[in-house]
Amino acid sequence: QDLDPVTGRVAHVPDGRLTEEMLIDCLSATAALVRGNFVLKSSLCGLSPQVVEARDVVLIILNKNGRIRRQSLLKALTESAEGEAMDAAVITEHLINQLLEPIATRGQNAMALRVPDDETFAARFHTQAEQHEAYWEKREEALAHYVSAYEELEKIVG
Image (cartoon, rainbow, N blue to C red):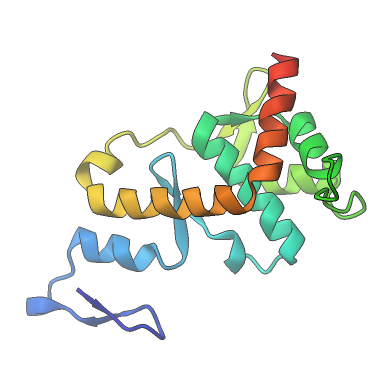
Protein backbone atom coordinates (compact mmCIF):
# COMPACT_ATOMS: atom_id res chain seq x y z
CA GLN A 1 0.00 0.00 0.00
CA ASP A 2 1.79 3.03 -1.31
CA LEU A 3 0.42 6.43 -0.32
CA ASP A 4 1.33 9.48 -2.37
CA PRO A 5 3.03 11.78 0.19
CA VAL A 6 1.53 14.93 -1.36
CA THR A 7 -2.08 13.92 -1.95
CA GLY A 8 -2.40 11.15 0.63
CA ARG A 9 -4.03 9.04 -2.08
CA VAL A 10 -3.22 5.46 -2.80
CA ALA A 11 -0.56 5.63 -5.48
CA HIS A 12 -0.65 1.94 -6.30
CA VAL A 13 -3.32 -0.63 -5.58
CA PRO A 14 -1.94 -4.17 -5.96
CA ASP A 15 -4.07 -6.23 -8.33
CA GLY A 16 -6.56 -3.36 -8.42
CA ARG A 17 -7.89 -4.36 -4.99
CA LEU A 18 -8.39 -1.89 -2.18
CA THR A 19 -8.14 -3.60 1.20
CA GLU A 20 -9.76 -2.42 4.43
CA GLU A 21 -6.29 -1.67 5.80
CA MET A 22 -5.50 0.54 2.79
CA LEU A 23 -8.79 2.37 3.17
CA ILE A 24 -8.14 2.95 6.88
CA ASP A 25 -4.64 4.21 6.13
CA CYS A 26 -6.13 6.73 3.67
CA LEU A 27 -8.83 7.76 6.13
CA SER A 28 -6.19 8.26 8.81
CA ALA A 29 -4.70 11.12 6.81
CA THR A 30 -7.79 13.23 7.56
CA ALA A 31 -9.42 11.61 10.58
CA ALA A 32 -8.41 10.53 14.06
CA LEU A 33 -9.68 7.50 15.92
CA VAL A 34 -11.76 8.25 19.02
CA ARG A 35 -12.96 5.17 20.91
CA GLY A 36 -12.88 3.11 17.71
CA ASN A 37 -14.65 5.70 15.54
CA PHE A 38 -13.16 8.18 13.09
CA VAL A 39 -13.55 11.92 13.70
CA LEU A 40 -12.26 14.64 11.36
CA LYS A 41 -8.91 15.96 12.58
CA SER A 42 -9.28 19.36 14.23
CA SER A 43 -6.52 20.83 12.09
CA LEU A 44 -8.70 20.26 9.01
CA CYS A 45 -11.86 21.89 10.38
CA GLY A 46 -10.93 25.45 9.35
CA LEU A 47 -10.73 26.65 12.95
CA SER A 48 -8.37 29.14 14.57
CA PRO A 49 -5.31 27.60 16.25
CA GLN A 50 -6.78 28.20 19.72
CA VAL A 51 -10.08 26.52 18.80
CA VAL A 52 -8.18 23.61 17.20
CA GLU A 53 -6.45 23.10 20.55
CA ALA A 54 -9.74 23.34 22.44
CA ARG A 55 -11.36 20.78 20.12
CA ASP A 56 -8.40 18.44 20.52
CA VAL A 57 -8.71 18.72 24.31
CA VAL A 58 -12.38 17.72 23.91
CA LEU A 59 -11.42 14.72 21.77
CA ILE A 60 -8.61 13.66 24.12
CA ILE A 61 -10.94 13.70 27.12
CA LEU A 62 -13.70 11.87 25.24
CA ASN A 63 -11.19 9.32 23.99
CA LYS A 64 -9.89 8.70 27.52
CA ASN A 65 -13.13 8.87 29.51
CA GLY A 66 -15.98 8.41 27.06
CA ARG A 67 -17.67 11.49 28.53
CA ILE A 68 -16.99 15.14 29.28
CA ARG A 69 -18.53 17.85 31.46
CA ARG A 70 -18.89 21.22 29.77
CA GLN A 71 -18.38 23.40 32.84
CA SER A 72 -15.20 21.61 33.90
CA LEU A 73 -13.92 21.87 30.34
CA LEU A 74 -14.64 25.58 30.12
CA LYS A 75 -12.87 26.25 33.43
CA ALA A 76 -9.90 24.06 32.49
CA LEU A 77 -9.44 25.94 29.22
CA THR A 78 -10.00 29.50 30.44
CA GLU A 79 -9.04 29.58 34.11
CA SER A 80 -5.81 27.61 34.03
CA ALA A 81 -2.87 29.11 35.86
CA GLU A 82 0.71 29.78 34.74
CA GLY A 83 -0.26 31.88 31.72
CA GLU A 84 -1.53 28.80 29.90
CA ALA A 85 -5.21 29.79 29.84
CA MET A 86 -6.97 30.27 26.53
CA ASP A 87 -8.66 33.57 25.75
CA ALA A 88 -12.04 33.56 27.52
CA ALA A 89 -13.36 35.91 24.83
CA VAL A 90 -12.79 33.11 22.28
CA ILE A 91 -13.39 29.99 24.38
CA THR A 92 -16.94 30.59 25.55
CA GLU A 93 -19.73 28.32 26.72
CA HIS A 94 -21.32 28.82 23.30
CA LEU A 95 -18.14 27.65 21.54
CA ILE A 96 -17.86 24.61 23.81
CA ASN A 97 -21.44 23.72 22.88
CA GLN A 98 -20.62 24.18 19.18
CA LEU A 99 -17.60 21.87 19.49
CA LEU A 100 -19.57 19.20 21.34
CA GLU A 101 -22.87 19.27 19.46
CA PRO A 102 -21.73 17.42 16.29
CA ILE A 103 -19.90 14.66 18.16
CA ALA A 104 -21.57 14.30 21.55
CA THR A 105 -24.97 13.98 23.12
CA ARG A 106 -26.26 14.73 26.58
CA GLY A 107 -25.81 11.87 28.97
CA GLN A 108 -26.32 11.61 32.69
CA ASN A 109 -24.42 14.63 34.13
CA ALA A 110 -22.07 14.76 31.14
CA MET A 111 -21.79 14.69 27.36
CA ALA A 112 -20.97 11.37 25.69
CA LEU A 113 -20.00 10.44 22.14
CA ARG A 114 -22.96 10.26 19.75
CA VAL A 115 -21.90 6.91 18.37
CA PRO A 116 -21.18 3.85 20.51
CA ASP A 117 -17.60 2.78 21.07
CA ASP A 118 -16.27 0.35 18.48
CA GLU A 119 -14.49 -2.06 20.76
CA THR A 120 -13.55 -4.36 17.87
CA PHE A 121 -11.56 -1.86 15.80
CA ALA A 122 -8.29 -2.23 17.75
CA ALA A 123 -8.46 -6.01 17.56
CA ARG A 124 -9.19 -6.00 13.82
CA PHE A 125 -6.73 -3.25 12.86
CA HIS A 126 -4.05 -3.41 15.53
CA THR A 127 -1.35 -1.48 13.64
CA GLN A 128 -3.64 1.40 12.69
CA ALA A 129 -5.11 1.55 16.21
CA GLU A 130 -1.59 1.82 17.66
CA GLN A 131 -0.76 4.65 15.24
CA HIS A 132 -3.83 6.58 16.38
CA GLU A 133 -3.00 5.91 20.01
CA ALA A 134 0.46 7.39 19.41
CA TYR A 135 -1.15 10.40 17.69
CA TRP A 136 -3.36 11.08 20.74
CA GLU A 137 -0.46 10.57 23.15
CA LYS A 138 1.50 13.24 21.27
CA ARG A 139 -1.49 15.63 21.23
CA GLU A 140 -2.14 15.02 24.93
CA GLU A 141 1.50 15.77 25.71
CA ALA A 142 1.20 19.07 23.83
CA LEU A 143 -2.07 19.94 25.62
CA ALA A 144 -1.27 18.32 28.98
CA HIS A 145 -1.85 21.51 30.96
CA TYR A 146 -5.52 21.67 29.92
CA VAL A 147 -6.16 17.94 30.21
CA SER A 148 -4.63 17.89 33.71
CA ALA A 149 -6.64 20.94 34.74
CA TYR A 150 -9.82 19.21 33.55
CA GLU A 151 -8.97 16.01 35.42
CA GLU A 152 -8.26 17.97 38.62
CA LEU A 153 -11.59 19.80 38.34
CA GLU A 154 -13.36 16.47 37.84
CA LYS A 155 -11.80 15.10 41.04
CA ILE A 156 -13.36 18.02 42.92
CA VAL A 157 -16.76 17.64 41.26
CA GLY A 158 -16.69 13.90 41.80
